[in-house]
Length: 487
Image (cartoon, rainbow, N blue to C red; front, top):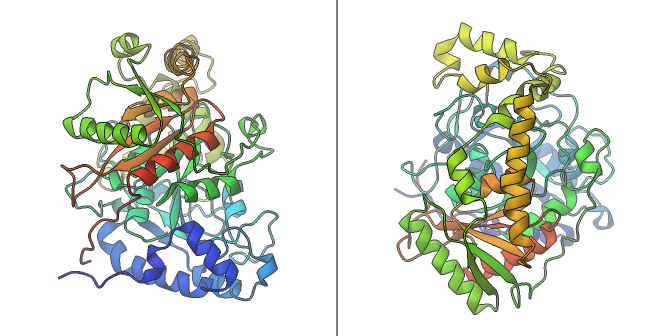
């Protein structure tokens, strides 16, 4: 048994939907009704959405009456928001049952910029008119609860399932966001990343994932891990959608210092970006699989055919990175003070990391399926970043990832670096530089889940990077959807 073919509305990306609603070819109410019906049919199996917005349809209905001249850039477009980002009137839980009573009174700035004024009936400057369908499931506490937690699992939302098949990983921690975009439960979703948590689920579900330059999107109103690396970003079915969503969300916020240091780049996509582009291909990833190698080779062929100039290189600090191993020191030190600052504003739920740990211990059957080793490690720190070990760890990360790593590559004149799979996402994250995950169909993956590659650019090069990504995605044939499955 298979599902009937999806409604044609579901085939339209964000840009096409927004164009149709602004012209009046489609109405927000019919689009939202279509998506809510699909969400209701598929989410019980996929568990990609943790909370459905009870006001979504009423918001969309109200948008039908907005005069054409007042319709925003995302008029009536249905979006999902990862459940660690504040949406007024909906719980923000980070996937934890302990946080199910936390309902923020206000939107995170990025949400206020995206959504329609109708959801809470308050006019918003810059509101783009999107309809918030609900909150996406996620790996609990953004995958910073313990070591070995399964991607896509949360004590509140359960285990998210990849629409390409339950045998496939969902990636983490924006697992529900990636799954929802691939399964067409929303037109696009907003996730967050500290180290791979946007590009990993995008790669796992075969969609586009953009981790922007650190600070380009304000982090106010987001349950944090690390102020050195946290950012929100879009997961989409086209690169042009990612650019449109970024143009709405980006910009300074008074409560996020990093957002005030960056000018918003020009996010207009160039149709000829690949012609003459200089890209460096990183070939010394020690754990690259055969499938990742095949996807990388296919992407290289497409880039060369489109006029890009490719160079091969080993990553400049590979030996030191291998010797140091995978390190979480910076995140462990920053998590406690950053999380405590957010929890201090919570009216129902734990007010400190110590209380989170205590409540988890009190109900281990519900809360501690995989343990809480990272929470305990973070709690053991002083919580004020005064330890010399923290300063050393941050200096090491910046030196190996940024100054002697990516900066050295870009100083050679390369526009971007191309990595197999999502290798390199940790380097881009530690450096604070933008990265884009792109799906790559290969012969070995024909009819199945696509492989992928990662493009990484210098700080503030988001517009150029998106243009390169759009060109490559176009050459590769765009995003493919998983086969329809019965709920």
